Length: 337
Image (cartoon, rainbow, N blue to C red; front, side, top):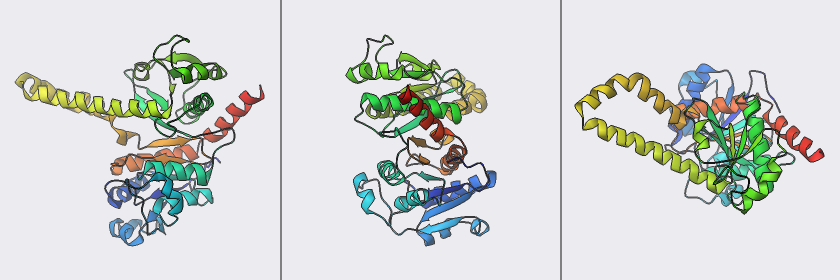
C-alpha cells in the first residue's frame, strides 16, 4: 500500500545492532529533526527512555519487548521468540500498525520474520535483499540478491529482475533501467547451469540487456544486476574488503612521504571526503527486502546513528512509492502474455 500522507509509521527494532539501543535511538531522533513521521521504537522501555531526550518522548511511540535476538541465535528460532523486539516490530507491519520496519539486528531473523509473518507479494516465490553499489560515473548499481536466497532457481532470478526493475523505476527514479544477469562472460553461452536457465526467462523483461560481468557492477554499464544470494553476498563482502584495503594502503603510503602528506592534506576535503561518502554504507542506511507485502529495511549490525537515520528515510521513501504495486504489475503482465 502506498502512503503519501505525513503520518507514515515506521517500526524500529531498538534492541538490534552491535552497539545496543543508543545509536538506534540517536538515529531516530536525527530522522525526526529532518522529516515528519511517527517512529515506533520496539524494545525494553526503560533502556529506550534512558537514551531518549525528554523533548522527543511525546513524539515517539514505544512498544515494550523484553526479549532480543542476538547475532549468535539461530534465525529459525525467531518465529518462536514472540516477545523479541524484532518479532513485535514485524508484527506491527503485519497488523497494519506500521508501514515499514527497520532493523540492524539479526538479518536472518528479520528476513525470516518479514517473509513468513508479513508475507510475500503475489507471483513472488522468494524475496531478495537488494543493495546499492557505487560506480565510477557517479550513479549507483542495484544488485540483488545479496544474501536472502542462497539456493536459487531460474524462476527466482527472473523475479529478482522484475523486482529490481520496479525498485529502480519507482524508488531510484531511473527511466528504462538496464538489467543484467551476472555471469563469467557477456555471451549468452557463458555462465553456469542456473544462469543459462534464467537467461531466456529474463528476456521477458523489456529492459534486460543480457549477461554482465563483475566489473560492470562498478562501471555504470547497467542499473540492475541480478544474481543468486550466495554469489551476491560474496560479491558484497569482497567489495567491502577491497575498499577498506585500498583506503588502508593509501594511508600507509601517504605516511611514508612528505609530498604525499601535503597532497593528501590538500585533497582531504573534496577528494577523500567524497570517496568515503561513495563507499560508506551509512550513506544508504540499509538494504530493502524486496518481494514482501510491505516494507523491511535491513541495516548493517554495526550501524551508527547516521546509518539508522538513512535507513528510516529509505523506509519512508519505500512506503511512499508504488514499488510493490509495480512488482505485481510487471510479473502479472509477463505471466499473462
